[in-house]
Length: 361
Ligand code: NAI
Ligand code: MG
Image: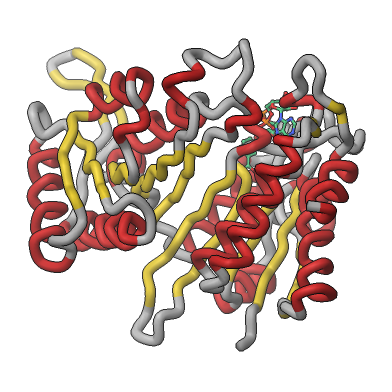
């Protein structure tokens, strides 16, 4: 099979953390005879410096045709004064939009080795493994009309929360399919008590469930209650599916149950076509961390775990993904830490040191 992978390392610590994924890829090539059709290109500030745009048309063509894109991070103070259309994040936005990446997967996994005295309520987060599926291309962040106006001499600001049936249907299917491979439970989150679009969301998710996923447990929850439950008893969740706005907030909330930004992977998926091909981009949740860039200090695990998600969801290589996830767990259990997750008695390692330790495991 052709496993076409496009790497876009980007700016700041992007190339450093991506370097450790390359280390894993070359190990897979040598030791497990798994060869990717690997291409690399510029994105963000690095692309702006070379071509005057945050992503070129040629790179977009590649991104649209490969099986998966792995992105590092973009941005940095160097490009703060660049016009909005060419800012580093414009590259990211174009990738997401043109690839129609409507389902954003944000796992919140707690590594028990990282639970220490500084963790809020260790007994609540121990063993946590939840997946938040956020709708990424519709809802109030994109709905029309939006803007400001004056009525009867009073100024207004407004946005429109709007979801079509197909938009809810397709993200619900992603959530149910994921649940079947995990804990077989989906919690659908909205505010059906006070929003018409919430009533509609609940209706469409229920229809998809009844029609095609009757064997998966489904419950519905109001978004404000979900925020409380995430902090009070996160272990009750398996897969959470929700809209763009609630997903933005709840995924960040869930992320902080797990500790460091340097540990958080993500995936963004497009629609599967008739042949089963699905566009996908994988990236760590963190940014380009200009404060530590170029110092061999960055935690590469978020990017390595994003690569592991890629193996699992784009290449159907669950066994290899399990191997990488276990290696991450083991290096942490062995007490190795980059500076961002350092604790008393642990061993401080560099970005490269962490990558080498992973290979060892
Ligand atoms: P950031 O995530 O880059 O950094 C926040 C803090 O976390 C910093 O202290 C940083 O050193 C630390 N950190 C982040 N990732 C780390 C890692 N892997 N290992 C160790 N420490 C890590 O967010 P910030 O500072 O708000 O933004 C910096 C730049 O990144 C900005 O230009 C921003 O626009 C961009 N950004 C890009 C994103 C992306 O490419 N998806 C997402 C968020 C921000
Ligand atoms: Mg957010």
